[in-house]
Structures are given as C-alpha cells and as structure tokens.
Length: 354
Image (cartoon, rainbow, N blue to C red; front, side, top):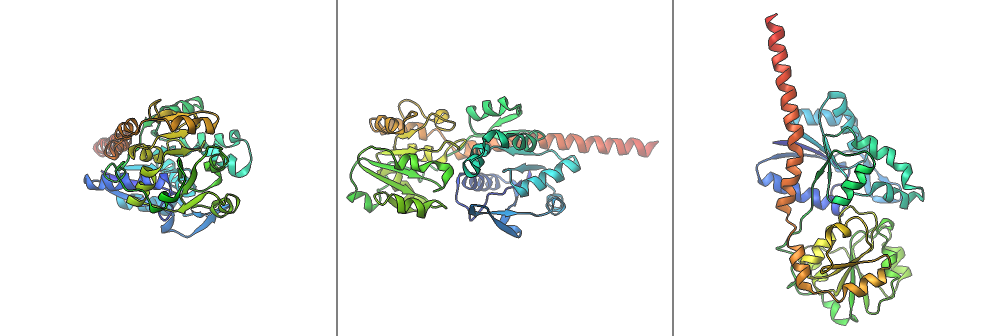
C-alpha cells in the first residue's frame, strides 16, 4: 500500500509524536509498504509562538495535493492538527478523498496551558478537524471515551510500543548516579510548561531529582531549582541507563494521551508515580505504578513496588503490534477509495455504451 503521511511534527523535533511516527513508518517500510512523509522541514516555515523548536509551515493545499496525487497514495493520514494537515485536509475534502486523523495530544489542554484560556474554547476546532475523517486513531480507552463525549465517535485503537532490546533493567546506570542520594526520582521528556514538571520539582520526597530532556523551559527551571540534576537530552542505551538506575519514574503531565516514557520506564523495571489522568490510568496497574492527586503520595507508594511487575507490564507493549494497528486503521479508507474508483469505472463504461 502507498500511504501519504502528513504531519506538523517531525525531525528535528524530539517528542513522543515524532518518535511514534518515525518508528511506525520504518516498520511499515520494512513490510514493503511505500510511505510518503510530508513534513515542515520540506517547506518554508516560521517558529511557533512561545515554542520556537516547533516550525509552522504554510504550504498551499494544492501543493500538498499534487504531491499526494503524484505519489499515487492509496491512503492519506493526517497526524496532527497543525497548518500542513489543515491544508491536506482541505485538499482531501475538495477532492472527495478519504483520510484518517490521530489524536496524539490533549490539544485543548495544551493550548490552555500556553494561552491561559479555557480548554473549552478550543474544542470546536478539534471537532471540526476530526469529524470528517474515516477514523480518529486513539491510543487509550480514556481518550476514546473523551472524544465520544465530544461527539467524535469514529475512533480506532492505535496503541504504542517500546524497544525492548534497548530498554532493559540490566542497562548500567549513568556514572552520576553514584554520587546522588537515594531514592533517585526521574523525569524524562520535553522540558516545557505543558508537561507540568514544576509539580515534580516542588514535591517533598527526600533523595535526588533528575530531569532528562530539553525544551523551552529548561533554562528557567535550571535557575529556579539549583539542587535538581538536569542531564539534558539523552537517547538509546544512555537513556535506558537513566531509567534503569532510578528508583521511581515521575510522570507529572496532565496533557498527554499516552506517555511513551511510562512504558519505557516500566520496561527498565522502574515503577511510575503519576496523577490519575489519561495515559497513566490506561497503562499502570497497582503493581507497576501509583497514582494520586497528591504527587508526593504517589511517589512514596511507587517506591515500594517490585521491579519484576514493572518489567512484565512494559514487555506487553510492542511496536510491531502498534504498526499493525495503524495499518488496520488505514484499510477502511483504502477500501472506500477502491470502491469509489470501481464505481467511476463502471459508470464510465455504462456511459460509453449509451
């Protein structure tokens, strides 16, 4: 199958959306499918207000559509709700082309954090963007229920995976851990306002706090919390070592729909402390993590959990399964397109005989 993937989130951005798309694209290509990625790095762009790492591209819908047509796409997937995907959606609607979308981020809550406006203001846009898609791909049951409550009922389950060859409990910890007081409490992810990292940094548990990641809030937090160890961006085996050597992984975000870092931590045998929100409530069990409205309580409870239970749960998430679920979500629009083309061919044949 030929799949046109349009996304406003792509390299060099480092986040869960990019990692998910990058991994699934690679797996589908390995299976023999052809993937056309249409992303901001291919067009002139401007930095997003208050978030310069994210580039906003404003290519015309006709320009994007011509690429999709020239590629001969069997399916079109719009991964994000940004300007490139808006233009691709416009072209699809104008041409009568089916397309799928995905709900990767709690977008209304994300924007509310950055604008200090009510999330309800942004829901009409979310409904407009997704309501005409063949299916909205969602990673968890709680996101499915949330979208259903907003009259977006045409959802398709698309979970996430973890690289179990890399994220393991036996990976050596970083050298700096030798000099840190236990318990070591770890955060991994974007260092940005919507991740609610300050809730973790303000927690009162004894021990050491470590933050792995980069982002627009890094320098401000580094200045305000001099006792916190900021390790910067890490990847691969080095990142796995930060997970495996920590005593608890703290996930303070309330705007994620899943949280790849949660299952990476679990695969490394590290229990998770989080708020009882979308993502953690869909992944964690009583044996692998602790959730509470008070993050201190969640951290304290998580520290008593067994790493073997964490490893068992983390091992259930496969990127191969994730890629298969994504592909299954594309099949319906492919069949619809085939049916539409068949009807056109039949109609032309009938017209030619009259």
